[in-house]
Length: 482
Image 1: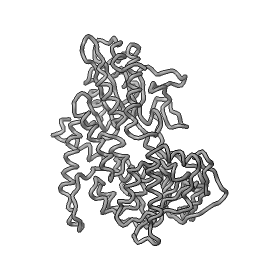
Image 2 (image 1 turned 90 degrees about the horizontal axis):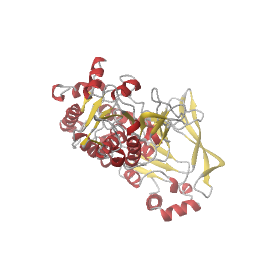
Image 3 (image 1 turned 180 degrees about the vertical axis):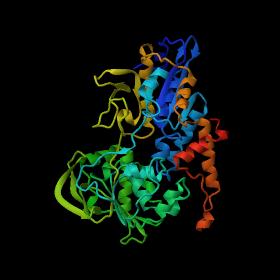
Image 4 (image 1 turned 135 degrees about the vertical axis):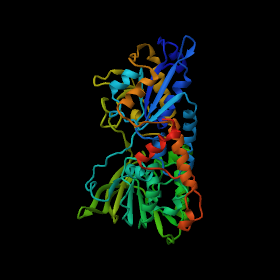
């Protein structure tokens, strides 16, 4: 794989290289940014023109719709992405759906190359009896709801007093923390008003988080774990029988500072926890539990059954033949995200990714589709942290630039041609100026929020607009320049 700039200099196009990036989350923005900085040069001039498309009216993808609202430090990544798009050398167009508003043939006609960065927003499946009972939910669906995703229902059935959350990753902790936290304590965030109202009515008393392996195998980060202890009037409950360590666990604790930090935090909480809980809500952390069945009556969740596991010496878990049942009225599976198939593109239904070789998208025959690339979770699956996406984008862009001489030539590469096509089709697209208008509007909603009417003394930085039509209307208002 060549250095991006070196690879770019091999190109022979006599006009700007036209690239479409589908998806404006971190993966898409990083890819666009790296491509602009690679400086493809023809005749001594910078010639790369990039359009960034998103199906949502607002940019930032996972950061806006997949990160819990009480994560201001993680959401700070938006500031970095914002700076990239604020430069003006990458055009953003929202409310444009690939497969509906633009086909693959449309993209090929208007662009020399296309990078798919559509991410993964679906829940990984869990094939156990009872998974389809009323009260059984996908954690990713819940995240979309509390983050104000424009394409999900405004209501959520928060009727359970006792809840099980399956998974030991960061999303599982996000879900458990939002479920157990008092709604008033989330008002300092950008949480949408409909989400606040629903959470305020929640009767929850106990949230149980279950992991299949031990404390040394958890997939949280230390930041996520520490944030659990910051929830007001929520006690963390741990169980001594769940603290098992095998040879692989001991080695991980010795050699990995992150694992050591998290295990020390958990063991300190276990030792220091009071004999009786005094909070009105409790968040239980369980390890060595493998779910085998969701129990129900009259079509609704009434409990969940687990097989106790034990570590096998390698850090993996095996069943013990001992089974336990917990009374719960809702189950949230947070065992991972899963990618969605893209129209006219091959899809690996087993892994939830677009088949590719280092980012070069492959066709049914296993050969690279000329000019078609992928990056981010749709390329490699939902693994790693947001920062890992930069290296992934670099790999994809490097291969794209290696292919410059063999890229198919777009028939209508003029920058305004694709906009004319979308206008002809009646697409109400939004642009970067429109995002600034929506951003300003949401911040104004936060400034004008009347917390005193709720008996609270707090300030809100913003209130997120949820309705798609309202987002489009605001973004396309006279000041948006659309």
